[in-house]
Image (tube, rainbow, N blue to C red; front, side, top):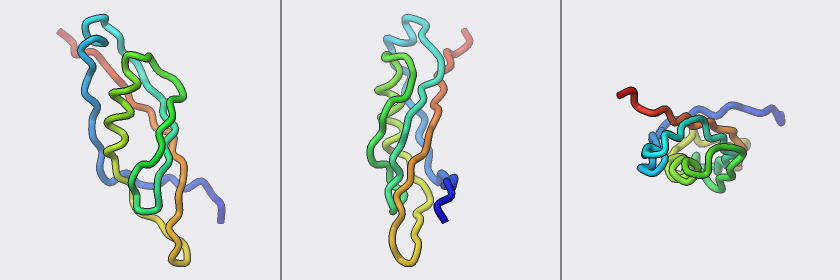
Length: 92
């Protein structure tokens, strides 16, 4: 079955809000295309969209995420996940 399975996220790390982005009042979503390895670790991360001031922080956080490992007939399965990381300025 080649269904696009939503693999469950078992460990999530929130991104650090970059100081420069905060100073410039930059906020909004960063969309990433994430390669999920067979053991649930994150492999390559590609930026789909988002403000350049926010993208690196989003990537650094997502690289620490862990997904449910997945295998089929003993073979670890890699999959792709599209992730949206939202940056919202703290209300002062």
